[in-house]
Image 1: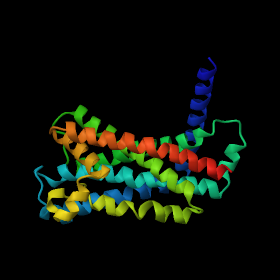
Image 2: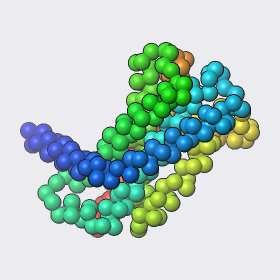
Image 3: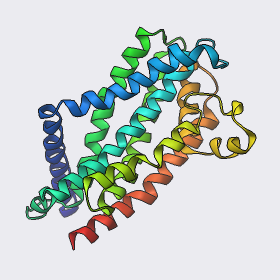
Length: 259
């Protein structure tokens, strides 16, 4: 019974802090606006400027691009986790949370859960834009929703990586640079925008074995009605592996900052 009460208390704390984080977005809507402008620009530029020159096996380029853009969107969005944590640390917000009788792990859990909620909104918006420029669901809504679920889980996993970064640096500016500088090469050295087979052979070896390529391929296969078993398995293994490594590391980093 004591364990049940502690669990209920932890869930209540997580939901309360998540609500606080979401209220922040309503008061600073530019955070959502700017986090969606960039992926929309990527989608429009690659569709209308580069799409005619990129050869894929999907027929229309937007059918290939949208699943990858969704993965890119949650990946870039997950970097906001570390920035927000660094900001709360610098402003003393987390110190105030520590002075309250709450479950301390709820602070990290609520931050990552907040970003899942934000990703749901951004994914919906990006899918709507995709429909406007020609994307269509032709192989079942359930398959497409399954792909979106993988995207959300992928963003959740990378939020914990970002949390580790945000808790390890000393200021918000460093968190922004440290969060994005390593993500950009991974995004472009993947199957998000172009097939990996079109890359130089030495780069293919790397690009084929990244979590970004595995996830993009899994979502694309589900969306296009292609066999997704191997791709989905690889994506899920990456997701669970990242969570298994970076949740404990984030907690350790948080406890060090606590001291």
